[in-house]
Image 1 (cartoon, rainbow, N blue to C red):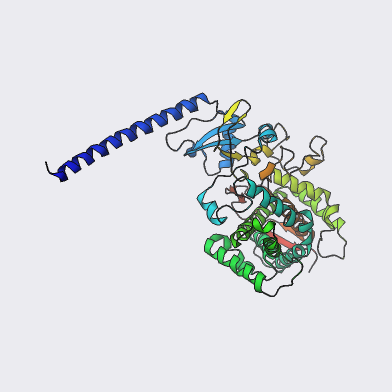
Image 2 (cartoon, rainbow, N blue to C red):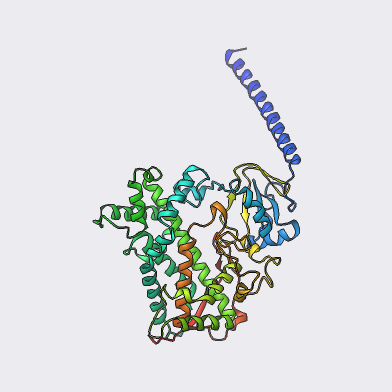
Length: 477
């Protein structure tokens, strides 16, 4: 036999042997995995299909589908979504049991490809993996970017943008066409976020399209940072969030956390997307509920117009402290329509045990804030819009900042939304001005029962059909 044939014969035998050994090892590993899974006491859940697991049961509105499944399988429910073991938390009691003593274990984030892309490899706040970098960057941002003091410092930007949008709505009051309030609110929140984050000269029309393309977004950030560094801006004073971030980058201590422009860009992405998307959704849902509940609309409008001096054409932030019922309206709207119904997904970073159930590390976790906000154990007539409920003694003290597990529109624990102060004052000021300046009616031929309440599912839950209303400028301006 020639050396060439001997080589091929030996090569073929080696390949076959390696193949057989590989099959054996894979079978052995799968058997071990199955045995290990069988020894774990996982939470209950629906039957899985091969390969896809429970993906087919999510439907077009996963937050609603998961709420219905939890009614059969419990508030701690185990699913298999493709290759991802998943835990769904659907009640206030379950959320309390999880996060009171296991918040750290549930503080991870899944490292998804798309998130890596838009967050410059997860160096932001919202999606960074739990660890020392995240702890320090969040602490820095809470002190420098998102504190009550910093948010209050942007009162002028808020009032300028809100007044501009109110004036824009007023110019369309005489048109026979209804006003697309969904589009108007998105424009407002994008414009406000851009002015606060990037400065006064940001072009809103361009900014509204930035999140559609990562390269455009990156180029925009580059130009904004360049202008702030070399644009002849004042040496002292922070005029916007980019100024703050550049100052922190130069700091000998904080600069270690933000060693390159991508760190600034990642934080700006969080601010831009979270600051505009969630606030606009909350405003639209609140106005939608008020249109379906005329008595609540009238009560809120009467309060605002009584609290604001007659010679004033707008509500400013000093007036907000007098608007008690308006605060109840916002609270009730957030209960029924949390901006992120399943919140930002989490991932367990270690094995833990909840209520006697084993939760392995690397389990994806969804907190169904919509289901929790409509839990009949804590909310009477949970699907009804009734702001007055928050004046009742049993729910008066329930807040939405993550300390009361019955109401979690902005998340909870270490990974709760850090921008809650910024979002809330935007919602409150905008809504107060909408009610103060305009009377709102539905388009001709529509009644309150005709208002569609279907949502368009996403990380942020928007109204599927835009809210279009007829406005009358009662100030005659």
